[in-house]
Image (cartoon, rainbow, N blue to C red; front, top):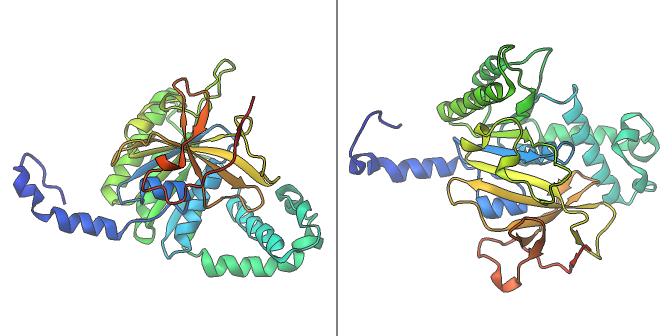
Length: 336
């Protein structure tokens, strides 16, 4: 516990080691090869911001982090503020069914897609696995608790919901920032700023990490940067100012070409734009998102952007940093 007011540094440092190791004992993982390598862990008090343009996988990444921790006996409270009721449960169930269909080599597995499954048109493919999927979720995901918003949900409601659940939850995901309602007399920037401050205050006071999903501004037709920057966060700079880590994802299709790419692999750039503990790394990771299971592969390739952030080039294998255990050199062609 931090003593208020001024104290000599030698006095404050007395319990430093004990407190630091106590924090480390509560560390959680990203369950993403690149993020676990470069950021090491999720710690109490962290406010982690995940940003991407609309429809580019923010929820998939946040949900995979939540699921990974829930499957390792951590409790995660997920505010699904944009989703329709049961959307996260259905998408999680379908991802398991799809993975299982491919694992078993079921006929017509290549025809599986979420929309047709939602409409009941895939019963002939995976209908017999429905109860097995429910049982898998019961056995593995009881620690993942979802919260769907009502007609109105403002920052006061968010604070109350977090405080009410804090004894039963080890971390929170808020998906996403722009679906927390602001006061009628607030402009967008002020509303987002005030909401972000509430989230940060709660994270600090309760000692629970928060993963916050946020929109990026729509890409200007003239902009050619392939990976977003801090300035691209929509509505307010406050969210990145007070975050401990800022992560962005962006499509890599059309930037690099992998001749061995499968139809289900979506090349994706993952960048850490801010890390308060160690500083942002000078690398951007190229990884593959598996469209069948809605998960990222457990390997990645590191690269660097040019000064204008319009080109990406993978690093030489001899330049691989010691922490990059998941780095794999790929045969890539730069798209013309």
